[in-house]
Amino acid sequence: MQSRSLSRELALLLLAQLPDRGAVSVPSDTTLLGLLEKALASLAEHVRDGLDRSAEALARAQQDLLDSELQAGPEAQVPKVREHLRHGIAQAEQALNRLSACLEIPRLLMLADQEVVRRGALDRARAVLRDRQAIDARLDGVMEGWRLTRLPRIDRDILRLAVVDLESFDTPSAVACNEAVELAKRYSDEQGRRMINGVLGRFTAARV
Image (cartoon, rainbow, N blue to C red; front, side, top):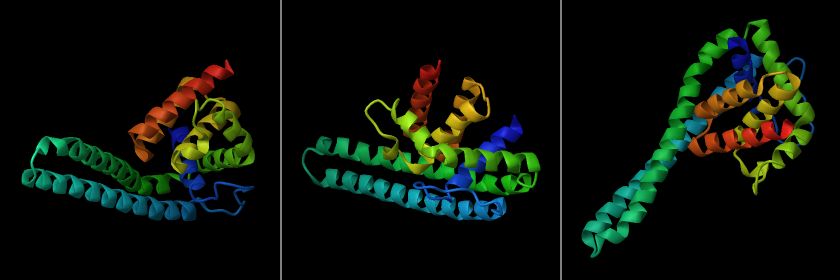
């Protein structure tokens, strides 16, 4: 079970380094180490961007509080302050989740030399890339008013990996859904976790 979880996480990081559209295959000479180094740089950049956006939102909230002290009717500023605070906290949560993922990279790099983990990651990535168009169409069918393309790239890849786990790797539905939510906890945000959980719940129900 541990090796499958690691393979799934490595596959997610691997997919993030490849184009999201068009025909793409994982080259046979691709080194997992090189892709994970690129993933680390990408995750670090996401962390910096998220923390910057969080700081900006919190600064706006602070300015609104100052403005409310200088203006009549400070209660009018409360909804704006609350929204800036909510946005800032959400951005900080996402950045910290991704920072946690960055800190796990050294452990994953050491484990990537294990053939079963490496092979599982590459096989999952290839399965997604081979059937991505069909997978996306089926996920769109249970999105309820949304389209997969509207989700962040990381959420799309988590959903795609869950589908191939269900259909190509004989993973039980409960396990595949739980693993997808765990990945979302590390790489996405609260909204992404709820969306992924809901979409996979409808997807698995439609397969019965």
